[in-house]
Image 1 (tube, helix red, strand yellow):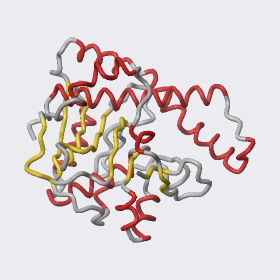
Image 2 (cartoon, rainbow, N blue to C red):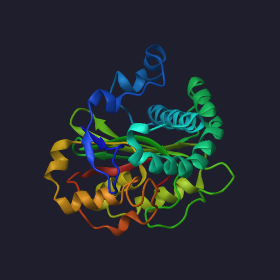
Image 3 (cartoon, rainbow, N blue to C red):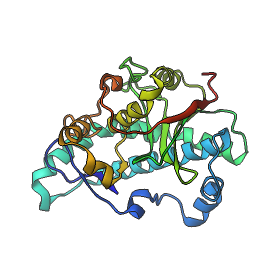
Length: 282
């Protein structure tokens, strides 16, 4: 599999090989608790319902918070890259830009506590989701948590500079029932920013949804897993376009929030099967 090259010294970034075990393993839980908590979605077919979606969302957002804690620790301890002085300044710049959002994400960790308690209690009523079934296993996978600034048309949904708590959304794109795929957006509690984003996505033409999803992933997700075969098949101009618009791409590690529907490029040949599944009355 391929992932972003985090050691690159120039923008846009490039994709580099990454072992499947490294790309797909989250070490934030011990084996026992990981098996106990996520057995319903690991040991049997995933269902699109509030129970299984709640576990997907909880795992994604926990991983996001875990990574933010690691980044905060590195920033607090200081990072000495004496063997890589060419990127020291850029990495320090990255930390400087990322830390306000990182500290806010950590301070908002109570949402995870509420999610976890609801899951333990078997109360999934406050989990919301929007899911697309795909007619093939996606060549691009992700599991992430994000705070969104805009919808797919570029209209603002929340101010990321606000001192108030921001609404989190999880996104998972994963294999489903061996030969299919599933894309799931999910969150906990009522959220107008997330619902506005989903309403804009739902209005995208059915035959364009999969490609807008790819655009979204490159725009908003810092950790995606890409099939080497698919990547090698892309023309150089397509690769450059995707990397330059990526979460890390435009200018060093500056998130981009421009309309993802503005690009008509057809990146993948995935087709959405049936109507989107959701509990949002869409």
